[in-house]
Image (tube, rainbow, N blue to C red; front, side, top):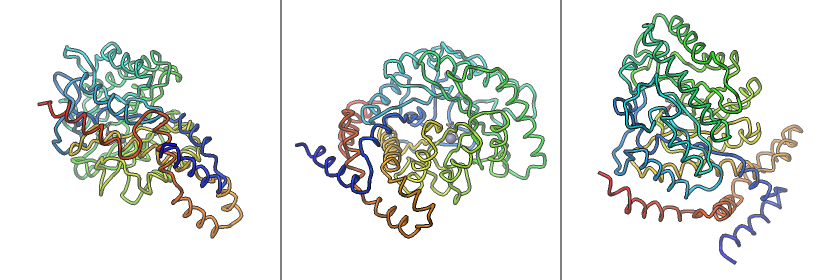
Length: 417
Ligand code: RNT
Ligand code: ZN
């Protein structure tokens, strides 16, 4: 018997001893797609001929060689990452990743400018998610877009939002899988802000205009992403947590919780169950903030495990999982692979918990036993089960994926200028 199989068999016995059915957990994991963010592949540059790049308080640092410079290169790199990531995947695109030789203004983009992505997703059998890009553009130079005091600038961005929703709906229709469109804007102020209310009222009016048209929920759904602060907009973010929570509730939208967008000791794992008491669905941007919204590669740490556990406990069908980080100091294919595999491991760890027993203990105030059991579960052989999941998907198990990353780097990435 191969080592993976042997370890898997032993792992199943360990889990059975605490009343957990491993096959059931693996079957559930199959059903949970993770949306990989295209922007890790090129440091948020995009393929516009005239604009693009990170701005508005976000930035990618580092200059690791091999950044994708064209849609073809990005797709190639994604295919390599997909070969290293087992299970269901989606690709999350930003509007600046359009694929067309012409200069197309952001308020004039159409589904046809994303046709190559739709065709690619079809071939990969993966869904697409989408984002309007409200940064990296001269009309966003003031770090104000939908909340800009100038009506003309607001109108331009409203038109961008409307154009993007049509693209998202076209993607969902073409792929027969819902496309989640997430609206994040950089809008905010560097220093003392005297009319926060005015800015927020302008944002409401602009968002209302963007979302006015009802589009079929089976093709596209809208999410709005809050934030605490960004570089250059330290004092006031117009789309704050309270703002978007209320806006999403009032307008029946998804709320997007980004793990880097809160105070450093505030965690999104505790927000999932609260928000899902009132909203049908949410979107997550899973990231790893180091001291601030630094967008590091997602680690398999306590907070990620808590996020995974809350997703499973609240119902994975109601939580759309997207990743959001951009580390330009390491191999970008590895960055996708490590982060996505970690997210899956966190979900699997949660699926392998004796949840019914834990619930019963909590209800009956069996707190000592609950603590003891949870701590014991930490050393159950999760890795052996995840390795089996990889093997079933014909993906390298364990550290073995790095051999492929290195080979791809040598063969492809190192040759890029
Ligand atoms: C910025 C937000 C946003 C972006 C992407 C590129 O702080 O997290 O989601 O990271 O849209
Ligand atoms: Zn985000």
